[in-house]
Structure formats: structure tokens, C-alpha cells
Image (tube, rainbow, N blue to C red; front, top):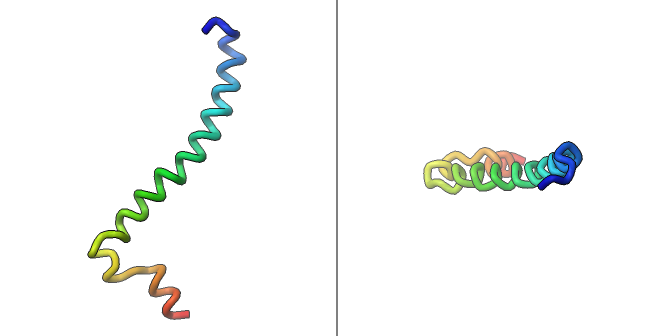
Length: 54
């Protein structure tokens, strides 16, 4: 990989940034869905309670 390390680095950084942003939400989604999926979470769901109140 002797193709201008600086130039490749810049392009790689931009690509990495896009991938990181796309992976960030995806990684958080499963983590956030995990707690509500538990049997203890459904006991007092905040999003569902808000909709019921409305």
C-alpha cells in the first residue's frame, strides 16, 4: 500500500466515518431493544404507557 498514505488515509477516514455512523445506530438498536425485551421491562414500559395516556 504505497499509494500516498496521506491521501488514502483521508479517503479511508471519510469511509470509516460513514460506516461508523451507520453501525452506531445499528449497534445501539439491539442494545436498547434488549432491555425492553426482558420480562422485567414490560412490567413498566415507558413508551407504551405514554401512548396509553394519550
